[in-house]
Image 1 (cartoon, helix red, strand yellow):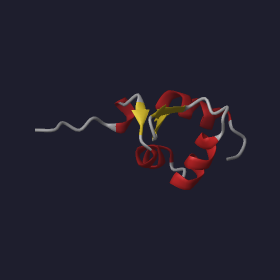
Image 2: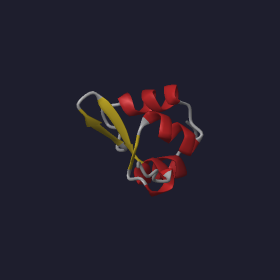
Image 3: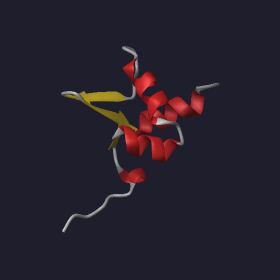
Image 4: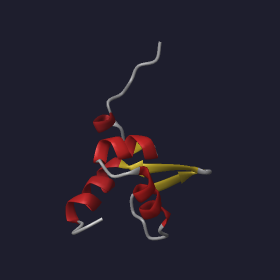
Length: 65
């Protein structure tokens, strides 16, 4: 039996989860997280995971995306 953890309780989000959580498209999140200085991305091999709290902060201070 697999328990589902709500997205707002997760520390790291997949691209699809982050898109559903933030309302930003996967393509734009992919482009933002490809930047070498991106503070909210963690790479696990080839898998891209986004830090939820840092993503929230990035969105909060961003003038436009």
